[in-house]
Length: 377
Image (cartoon, rainbow, N blue to C red; front, side, top):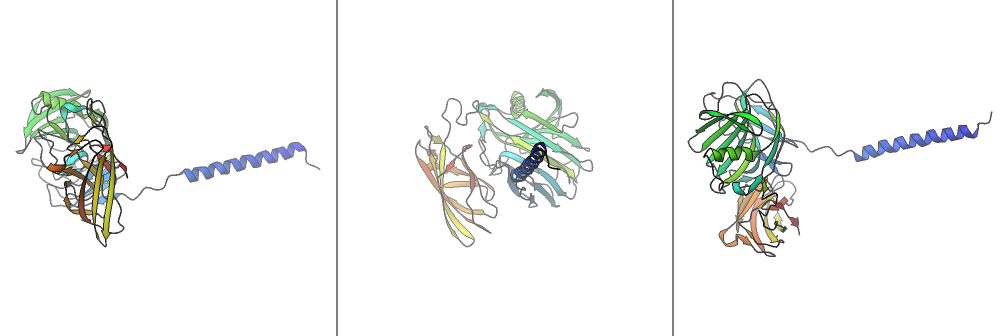
């Protein structure tokens, strides 16, 4: 029997539908993003790694000789080893954490910190924690304030926000009442650890995730006389203080932004910073020197400039000239010497450094001038 024209149209329609479906599947396969690079394991006592191109994850095993390792992920970190224990009536073992700002000269790429409290319009932050039950620890933010824009050590006042505590542990000092901050109720403790003042805000029950403004807690601290508006916010950190065990604890995600003068990195009424970086390297087997030229392409001079950038894995700075470099690997911050602290509009300053490398040599990434991303020449 001869097939009818309707039968041919039906077959052609089915073939067309099948080809369309196969094309859609092929498009999905092509559009699938590549697998992410392996997570970075950090076991060195004060080892660190950059995540999200703008935050630093640190192991920060400062209070014990027992082994501790953290794994930096795409969005946060997890504690993968946390051996040993310390008495619960003393200091914790460590503070594995992620931060925006500067911690003992290690500054996160592109940070706007240190920044004067009075110049900050808001400092939104968000956190998602992962908890365990077989350990003694707190989950806390650690926020530092100082009368000077220092990046090299302990600040005058420490703000701690305890999102959770497990076990018989308590903040430094003694309770002084309660406060409503960020729409939540907190128990407030104040005291001193001998080198700085500490104010702690303790949640009455565990908070797993929250988005809030860090400045709400800074304002409370100023109101209580433990800081002043002409002081500087130097870092916003989030992590854990473990006393016993701690493997499995995780910061699943973290974000921190500091808005200056209504969000303009140049400050209130000031032109925004704009910049261009030229990077020239002289490379030999296992070593190199680099000359870095920072051009101010904005319409106003930049004073007390800071250039942030991230060195490729395997590179380490051994010396520098015409600038002080904080951090020798990973996230690095260059600060000027006295004679080159100003970059005039349309002008430039040059500094250099020497270093070592392993593997394939590569150029730094993420150049930013006083928190503003720079283009590359």
